[in-house]
Image 1 (spheres, rainbow, N blue to C red):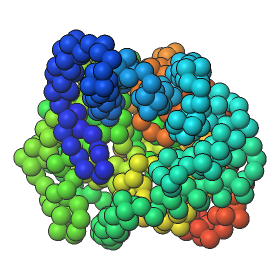
Image 2 (image 1 turned 30 degrees about the horizontal axis):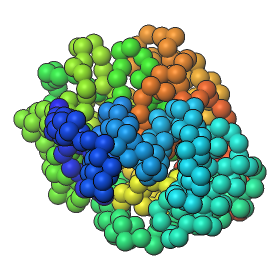
Image 3 (image 1 turned 180 degrees about the horizontal axis):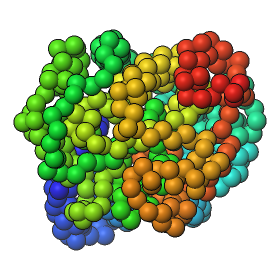
Length: 487
């Protein structure tokens, strides 16, 4: 089965079977490696460790975390003194929310080495992450500040450290210092070559977005379609601006026995490019006939199938979750006229602030969040287009507000299930336990494995002065989505 991963903004096809074959051959070579104490023997074992580490990274990238961890453990056997291998392994455990295991590994490193932090400065960052996850905020703050002070270069890890430090300071109620840390994190990222490239691509993406806004602003509805019976099922679409609660809804829906969520995969690959970018392409979407749409549907389901690890029973429905596919509701509606679309909404001010607080792997879209002004501007364009789609597709869309899910979990889940024609299951109440079994790639990976909490509702009020310049940009959406009373 093929999986696709995004590396440096380029979509690459990675064959899991090829990686497993590489792992098999590596294991065969490993059986012949002796405990030769000579320099050549030690060098060979170090090379084997690095080969297993590369395998671990590749396996992890495509979502095979357990096989990645197994490869990393083999790397540790060949080079037990390699702290970089330990660092990767324990950071993977942290991302998988296996904090107790990661903490035990951290203590083992400290016991095994006389001066581990002198060997590998990154261990300050690692231990700071783990102390944060364990709730020891002051200890985590001290470790991260030490790491930043001693880091030799302004690396990507330093940017991550500033970002995590900002979250800690926010939880400690030191809001101005938190904003300073977030600003430093984003500034470090923004000065990189990759960021400059992504920002240039963002300009092109926003130009295409503005074309769609103008196009649909002149039209009140999608082109009437021929009535016909689809030979295939329709997916459930889960979208929203990033940091609006899509990952939370993803985990909730995935806990239902009749749903399986596909987390942030490019299911429109090979389809969307032909219909977006200029008015001519948008016109071709309106004019697409049954035959062309049938080909696109087949491409869509082929894409979906390439990401599913098991075949679905006919009654189980796919939830296609990719937040920014909110810009492609017109395409989904043409492909699947009766599609059910769940749109996650959140107070725009909290949404923008939360995006600014993240250290994303950069794409053109995520590069918008390197500044508050950029994030607010991008939000305005994306959600302006959504408001046009909302008028066109009133029967296909259910809006779910993050704040209401937190305050009235059972009621909001019942609304979603009714919209999807499904019955209540008790497993929904314990979605966070199911989430702990999954590898969650979004920045919410450490939040959706906990019971619901309301700490992030209204957080923007602590940063109102910092948001002053972007408030006029966001105000129309504050009003449109019913948040005007939350002033």
